[in-house]
Image: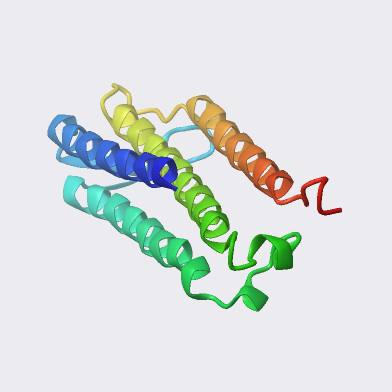
Length: 167
């Protein structure tokens, strides 16, 4: 769990420091929304633009912390996972909960990185003349985050198979 939590904390710190850096280089009036062609169709003051990012990040963090704590407080019969009786037996429960918490921390770290990447692309769109949002830059971030989370979920589920000695 430590590596998952460490990743999550590092991602949070990166997002905070990167947002502060972006604040310093962004213009006072920013394109806050773009049409399908990448042209701005709504403008907002810089404070409003960054306040929106802060609210989104706060929602993700506010959702992630309870979900990381949930397996700790839930009784085993309310945790839906393969081979629950085996993996949540008292002698393995702590390690299993650590694995679930680590997965949640890394997953939410990936989500935070993807959201921040979109905001960063938006800020850099505002630094161009004319202002243009290049959605082609966003696609690889979205695909990478979905693939990463899908792969992590596959590995997590596979890790909860019964050992061959138990089958």
